[in-house]
Length: 132
Image (cartoon, rainbow, N blue to C red; front, side):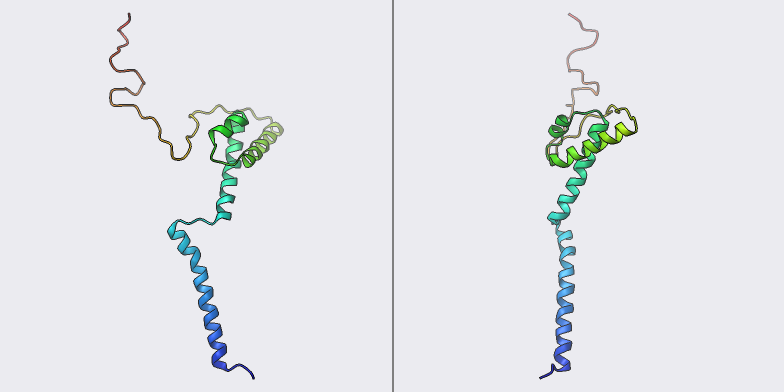
């Protein structure tokens, strides 16, 4: 027995509703801050490759790079470091000394000088003219 025209329309309506609700899951996940594990892994790998390349360009050893950026996976860091090494050798580039201290790990706080310490880091109570 052939389907009635109303049942075919009903099936199309249900399919369209399901399709729209499933497409909305991504928007809901973005609003809630839930990240897709595959997208997060791809983003982390790309970031680690960039960090590895930057470490090589600044002249840091790969072991130092691993310890500074311990929250990133080691394999992509090495891949970025190796790629930048080959690029620098091919183009006869010199290393660039870093101007800033290395980045701290996420979730760690920086030590800020207290109210008694000046911006130069001098200890309170001692003056430059006081010598024993």
